Length: 307
Length: 301
Figure 1 (cartoon, each protein chain N blue to C red):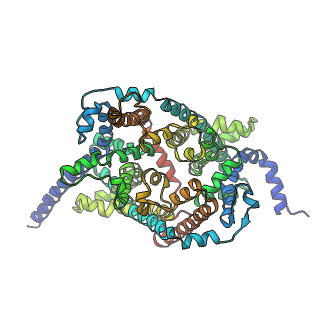
Figure 2: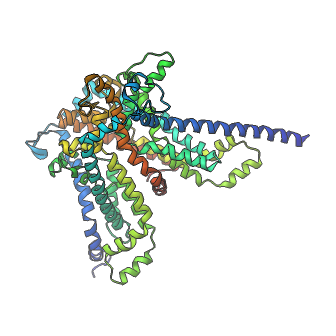
């Protein structure tokens, strides 16, 4: 009479069988609820005039007013432009760098040399961001190492971090310096999966090493490149604010200030809670849309996708 | 005639391949120099004589003179000691919490025939793609009373979803037969996890420990947002004050104003060394684990 496949029965049977498992994962669920879904609920303040006195629920609704203020403000275009430009320049210059490095390392026959190059280029990734930015600040000083080198070449020394037009190059170049080795690992791993027979066949046909690299190696790691590219696209508006905050200053805001650093400054330093939450929420939603569309396009075009 | 053409082609190819090789070695050697030199410069400068360094700030091929004054000032600064103490606590307690929570989640989510697992997985993975943002997180941390405690850098980051997925994938690869026999012997889930699954997954556990430890060691941003008391500052926050906000004066106390500026420079370099050398000493030994971690992580894709 009672269908054993009914939802209720399956539910009960599953609970009896797995109750200890559910009990075990409870702390993890609680963690995600509080520290991930909690902030999503807290993002409601973007539609309210939050004051700590009244709390999240008690504050007055203002609808989309903070969003309108943001879209109409002078800052909107500036930080959107800065965020997109830094992202696009990274995509253009930083994204291909580790691929290139992986291709080069792959061609090295000398094993010790290969190991030394890998060990040294991975290293900067493990130095803390604060120290890296400390070194950048020092080297780009008016009398820092980089300026001294420019002075030999006949240029005038200048405090480079005070120059808005130099912020992006400094940001991108130091990013490449720190990450090129580490990010090449994933491509090197992919390179190992390429069928060696293809190279033999190419050699028989007299293809040069450069041609083998272009026509065999590069296509071999294309799926990996596609996946990494999707992840990048999804994070187009997610420029890491940690490094920006360490390197920028009011003089360079016009090129350096991005969405996340703006959220940080408005919200936590100037206490514009609701306004800042609205900007943050705008950022999250755009990111989600970008990721889903990048994934969709990639699935259509190259059959590689995240889900 | 035909044979000759083929030979000429071969000779050309061999020549190009030779040039190709040389080009690659030159590029890679340049890259190694560019990567290494900034760190060598900091090393040389930290041991240099402050007065000589300030007048000769170009390329350094070795320390200018030899002086340990900067290191003495750094060691005498209580901030560095406090920072180290707090950071070591955050790393040890934080990694323990991370590992325990990640293992719990990964274990349950790797079991088969659990009705709600797919939904739970979606619930967790969704947070990778969407979040409430910085300000709401701050309000939550404040709400649960973690503000201005060392735990504020640990509890709100108890699980990294990415690491959870890596661990789950690895747990799923363990043959069922092992746990079946343990179940027959009456083992409960905790015993299976800690006595069977984890000992069999040591390579992944090692990778997780390293990922989490590096994260905790390097973390400064959330500490700067959540922690206000100076005696709770982790090392990276202390470093930020010295390196970025440029406040070496407190350390150079006792020196005259002019000397203070001079020694300030070398103090910075010495501070970088003191904060970075422990990591760089451990690094060669653990490097292979990181590489392994990336491989494991990429397999799921």
